[in-house]
Structures are given as structure tokens and as C-alpha cells.
Image 1: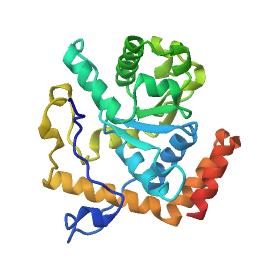
Image 2: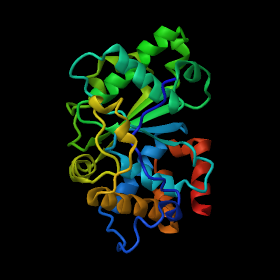
Image 3: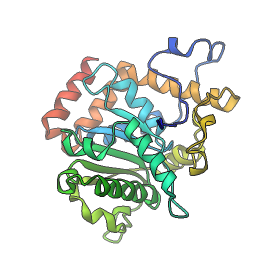
Length: 282
């Protein structure tokens, strides 16, 4: 039986789960924390109360901050990491498609499940041109067709949330989803965006060290990906990620997150108002 193959990532739900990995390390500096909280708040508010799957590694910091903030709420199990970031320079081979389907199934995503779930599945990622989302959508669409599940039902359960670099607003401003033909197959509300300052987008996407290594298609079947890294760069990233989780748990960050969420139009929705109360109560 084929089993999922995903890059190893340390469990950050508690420092005790890390053993002595971070012993002797000073508390790591957390760059751009206020801006990261603002981004996380907008992602949360625009998630439609669904299950958030952060594609690739770029938005790991947003995931880690939210995982700390939501740890004592009813949404604590709605955050997931999806190691999928691929522009598909060449068409996928049959073995690669099977591998990706197994990995998605391991994360609870299948055509059968999508057709029968109550909450939406929301894919979030930093977006430059939208290729990762386009290929993820194509992979799911083909799989749904192969399984003969009801597309008209499933299309209402899928959402794509792109974190983009902020540009000057005008009628001619480029928006990634307007250039993508596949987005026309989904309801308009299914495709949303969160814009951040260019320097924050660059930090998250290009500069921030990640716990896990890059996971290109050449490594999808490589079991070595599941071996934990203990090099200095990985441990530095681990310290920063653990710090974000801990900071997210704190009252100050939760209050800041709640205030920003309450300013979103979606705050009119009951699920979001209830979640803000949970954040403030801790």
C-alpha cells in the first residue's frame, strides 16, 4: 500500500515536544510581527470558517502564528500544511499523479470527502503568478472527474486565498485571479485575496528560513524527505517558528488578532463573531 510522503516538520504544539533541540538558544527575534498578525487576521476572516490548507512553505509563518492563537478555540483543528508547490514545467507522469493523490488523501482531501463535507476547504498561499493554484485546481478537477463525483456540489466547497504583494489600487491593477481562466469555474466568492506590503511578501516568500526543505517534484517519492533536519539553518527556523506559536498563544497577540478580524466585513457572520469571542477569552 502506498503511504503519504511528506517533509518532516517538528510538532510545535508545545516546547516539551521538541526535547532539548532548542536548549541554550536565546529567544529568537520575530521580524514584522504586527504586520504578520494583520495578514493572519485577514486570512482567517476570509476563510469562510473552513479548513485552511497552507500550500507550500511560503506562508508557514502565518500558519504558525494562527496555530498558537487558535490553540484554545473551536478552530484549533482547522489549520493544515500542504507540501505542494509546483509550476509543472512538464506534464505530470501517471506515477506522480498517483503520488499526489495519496498525499492529498493523507491530509483528508478526496473527491468523495469534498462532495460530502460541510465546511469548505480553503487553500492559502503566497501568489506571484498563480501557477501553483492553477495546477492544484487542475489536479483536483481531474481526480473528481475520474471518481465521477458531483462537480456542481464540490465547486461550492473549494476556495483559494492568495496572499499578494500590495500594489497601487486602480481600475487597471493586476489581479492574479482575473488572469486565470480556471477561476471562472468557481463562484466569485471562492477566490479571494489578501494584500501585504511588498517587503513582507518578499520576507515570507524569499528570505525567511523554513523548517522543512523545498519539496520539488523530484523529491515527491523520496523517503529521505521525511527525515528531520538538524542543521543550523533548520534549527534557527525551528526556534523562530516555535516563537511564533508561543507569541500567538499570548493575550497581546490574540487581542491584536481579534481587533483586526473585527474590522473585516466578514465579521457580520456568526461564526467569525463567535471565534473573536473565543480569541479574547483565551
